[in-house]
Length: 110
Image 1 (spheres, rainbow, N blue to C red):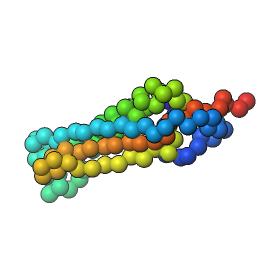
Image 2: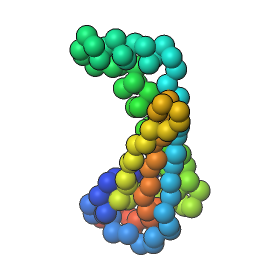
Image 3: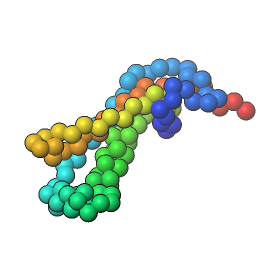
Image 4: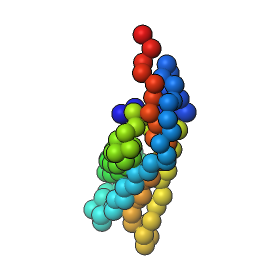
């Protein structure tokens, strides 16, 4: 499955637009990650625990979106947008949403 932020795939014209597909992932930040991140913020450096949680949520949202596109018979998802939002009391959760257009592509040119 091709997933791209561009509105086309080089050498593969769109034959059919199948609709908008989305993926969502929500992760909670536990107290130990929060404490570790606070210490890192004071001392300096990167908050690796948050980076890992963010990466995992983004990958899950993209996987979910691709799965929905595959159910429609798509070859690709084009024009993908990734959005991040903090939710919950005191920003205790992170939501990642992905959205794009599921398409069928023409066969590759030789």
